[in-house]
Image 1 (cartoon, rainbow, N blue to C red):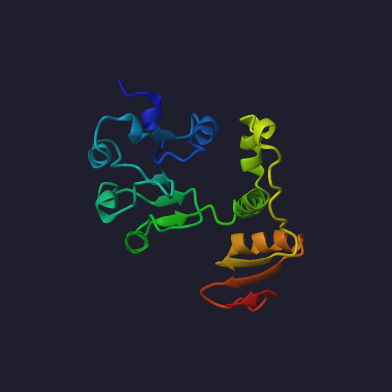
Image 2: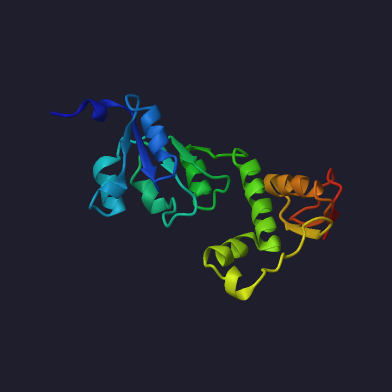
Length: 197
């Protein structure tokens, strides 16, 4: 006898993305989540056996699995691909377009968070925050003396490679430190005040 979950719309999860457990808990009775990583079967065999009626796919960028024509061939009912990323390098967009499959990305959802992290890491590297923390935790301060303070971020010249949404958010944050910002990108951005190279 088939379980009740098997009669729900199928969502195939490949990755799985870090937010998968949250999604599953939010929609426990709305979707039947297919989790190929729990199966002993190779992915293509799993898809052929269990995902023929799957209409939606949730996939994570940066993983080892790319949405290739061979994988898409195993998903004849696919109508929607949702990627938990901005980039789509892991998707075969021409094939998805040819098949009429809609694609949704995370868009700019994480741009501000990524910019916060980038500036935080820049401060960490310049000021040696993590290295100093390790120095103190290992007790080296008592035998080796003081730890160098590092460099300040204020008024530094900063070059940004790629001035997309994340790059713009990084630049905005660095303006607050009085940094001189320049950038390189595929095209010059006419509405930004930064030097283009």
